Length: 396
Ligand SMILES: [Zn+2]
Image (cartoon, rainbow, N blue to C red; front, side, top):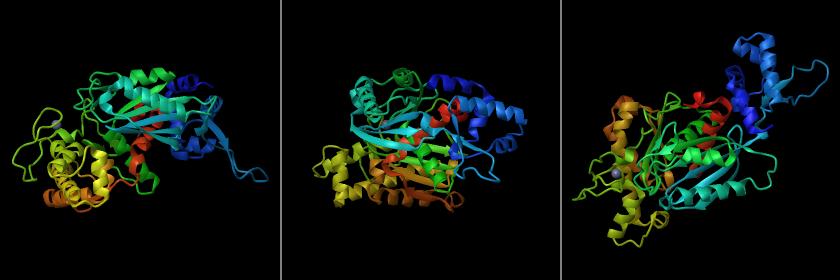
């Protein structure tokens, strides 16, 4: 069964609705499906037979036969295809091969500079995906997804006017990558991918959340918003671009620093990794990039620590407004700077609790990401799985 043939069967909403019941590993009998849907027995049988035939469902019954044998159970045939995802950052990428339910089976990392342009970066992605598929003869990717550190027009999957991504403006990423495997493609802003990853991880850990604000602090600063259990992308996909909003100057700097986007005084120009590299070098620290800044931070350098805490306060000040507007249950800090030590999250806490109204902060938790560096690929895989199995309408 080719991915195309199987996926074509999902144009029938009845089949999509049936398959939806099996998401998240549910094992159901035909009677269960009839109960959940209210469909006639013959309808249930026809739809499930089609999904079994297409290799999307498989029989599952670990209790075996015997007298009083329970009715046969079925589950999603997660092994019949794979998903390939790539979480691309400013200076490196994390890639994964996943099963159809979005579970990560293998991962890889590569260095890559986003400013090298789409041809170079996407060729690194393709090469790494090929390596992840080695030895998997006969198994095809049913979907591919990429997260990018810039504004992604939704649902078209095109990069629009990214401040740092030379050569990417207007590039149709979705079209390019879907052509490699003739399959479904999903292109997402990196912070949105983190947000979906956190949402999925919380649900898996048995502590589901529905209102979440995820801040990615790496070279740049971005936010992903989950509201009512769904990603809030806004009208065009630009929601959450907090890094280029105007910052409160709480750092005591005399000047208003110029941002990579060309404006002055952006949050990122005070608090992004590249800004901390600039400030650390001004204070005499031997740093040339975000990686070397992180090394100083890990080694406990007091300048690196102070700058990181200050970055947290600038970001906290910026998201206090978002906390007032959105009233999330949880703020999660991720990205390479957010994940290194607790200086940044401490700064964020300080400002958010000082600035947001008591009702919004009464039960608010502000924490670092529970999945660490795999949150982005986890989020991309989760969203792609929904998209592949349930169609784009289910994942908007
Ligand atoms: Zn800016």
